[in-house]
Image (cartoon, rainbow, N blue to C red; front, side, top):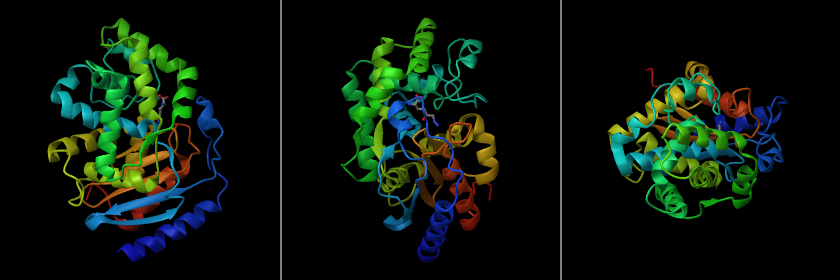
Length: 305
Ligand code: DON
């Protein structure tokens, strides 16, 4: 399997490298707007601590919304089921930064992966302590899960989003007006922007994702029930209003980020990280989505049997 997979990934990398339709980098965060979209990397973590890679699998990128999977895992560990009084578990069918359903739903975001929902989870993590302690918990989770201490925050990206993140400022203030933000908006926002600015390589992210995939070689950090539930949310909400199409094409739980990363989970079988910074119209990695579809077809991995 690893040999066949390595060959497949090498060919996929070569094929993608020849393509022209990379999509557009996220331009609303100036630090991300400077990145060349024509880049691609993939890492597949398999049981038995094996890892197969192709392309720029060691290059670090801004994990952005992929961090929401891990902040949710931390919150579930901290307060468990109580989080669901503040945030829902339904697909939003709207853009990741939409404010519309927040009004309709009386300030309770539809799910923890849209920006409004992630602000609520991060707000919970920062309650009763300093932002740097909440960030230390998320970083510690990632470092233990990946068994790699070299996972850090890119301060320039955090600063860039702090300076220009007007929509998130609006969302945080709107949540506050509904009484669904415990901390001052700037405290929660600052923590959230730094969490999104964590940088990791595909190899590091695939290794961290082993705990979500429930691989037996992974550090035991989540109960099987928690992992199953996080996977369900990734499947239904991980690609925002593109989640249905992604499930249709790929058939596996996944979470995207505007840095171009995708964490893809084949429960019990593999944890996959893909990176290509050009995005499609939903704000999800264009070549990353294509690679996920090709990989799922090649391996037959699917949660639908
Ligand atoms: O809050 C934002 O807009 C970004 N820090 C993260 C958004 C994101 O990654 C959406 N994913 N595709």
